[in-house]
Amino acid sequence: MDEDEIAWAADADEVFRQPPSFAFLPLPDGGDAGDACFDPGAYLETPCSEATCAAAGWDGEPCFGYVCRGGAYDSRRSGPVCAAGEPYVFKYGQHAKFQYLYETFPQVISPLVGVRAERFAVWMKIAALPRFRKLYGRIDADLKEGDVLSFNVEN
Image: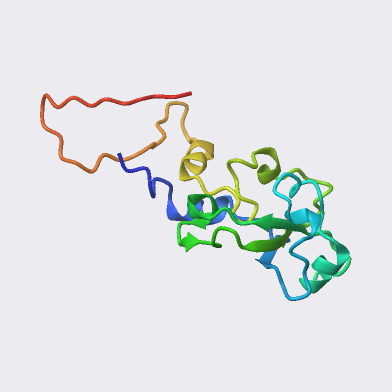
């Protein structure tokens, strides 16, 4: 079953895009790769040092470190955002005021990419009628009468 491109392109690209105050870039010259913010166990809780944020051009704004996992976790429809092992710095505006989805679900949502799961976008789309169906995938093979399909459903 094909589970790619099940959301409208506009939904996948725009509905769950990062907020306008979001920015990220590779660790700039002058940034400290040994900064505590790059520790995988604390990257969401420990902001980077002022020197690392200033090297990124974000004087006086808190920023956070992230070491890319690579693969599908750090990819968009258009391709990978970063390679595994690369250190990045990122910032979200009003970080103290909001809890972002990557903070709630760090094992599922990359802070650089945000929500990328098209199944999530399809599920969250508001239905116009009380009875509705949500596309989960697409069977691209030709089916004949009598063919048996089996699905494994996990919670």
